[in-house]
Length: 569
Image (cartoon, rainbow, N blue to C red; front, top):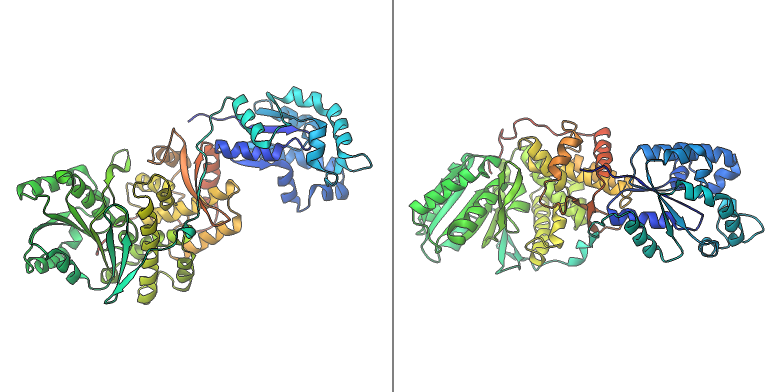
């Protein structure tokens, strides 16, 4: 990954340094900071108040300190105050930077500043245009001496930003995509015999059933015509799978149970080859079906087998973990892992039905329930804030004691995903929002050899994404801390000091969402929107990573996640 020079904007008051700098930073996917705004933040006073209380020399001393720190912190784009170069220390510190002089005429600068600018060096009897003209005479030579690029700045801010990017010979990242998931509405949920039926309308469509003791519904679904069913399950669930197989056999089905290694070990091409071999030996045809009974690894791998056997046979998902119910089993994503990363081989292959039997959740270990809640609260952050309110009232420990609340948050999370995938099955745009927290999460999973559970990694990834949004001025610190608090309250980790940033960023750079070598992250914003942001300035990610690890909070355990793991999948 190449080291990018910092871009520093200099120029007269009214030249547009802050506005153009912010535009350029956004279009390049870099972080931005305004030196004057940072000074005001640190002192707790605006610039005129600092001048009035302490004088210009005090301000210039403080300005040198702040600019030096911003340059040392590798902020991608920095806007300096108009008089910053009056100090030799600042001018010298810019020697190895891309220094852009916004060359504005005093007439245009004066019009932008206005009669009541509130700028201390523009106060007095003269109008701003005349005062700016005098400042230009005093400072122009210094601006030109420091600049590596001079850009006429009388045009629109957007035109000036474009001229800067072209002048520096830089390539823009893809523009930020913004979505308001709350505006998508809901799908009609039917309730029959205490079973909620949530529709997914993409493709040929299917129903997601949410309720308790739904084995009879599975039998009813398959008894319309006799056929063979290839029942895939993890080894710890073989007993439950054979009980279901016995019930299905009584309705005329021929069942072949296929136990597989537990957890992510299932998502291996050798396991898939074993499944293909048994399907072939037992003459499974397109009239038959594959049923995946288990957690997310089972539904991912089972879906891939169904998509590839005879170019696709019917798939029924019966998720048994909370994580699988609200995420993996819904939406039609299938996949297996390779040595290069998670889910790099797979397809979009929607099931014909998803059966979420909440009775399976009663035997979930606490860690398994918490990891599933990561995907639930994710849906709260990006779309349905009522999920957050419900989870605030019921901790992870007592959710099982509140079955109505548990069913409500599960149904709401499924509803969020169903609405999104109904509009965007193949992740051409909107569906990317569901990857909130997943950029870092997938890297943590791979770095840990998949010993860190998916939901735990997503929890850390969401805290990281929120901090990235803070670094990019998309989210304020208070809202970021609120996300961290709510995640921690569910018993989920919020930091991962076990791994270095350099180790994880190399994995992130190979993620499926990378375009042209630029990492794309899903971020939440202060106005409640979700955006997909290309980030070419990895220093933004580095600062965010270090920030979440410096804050006090629970880290992630890399102990054996299989203890009791997927006792129910």
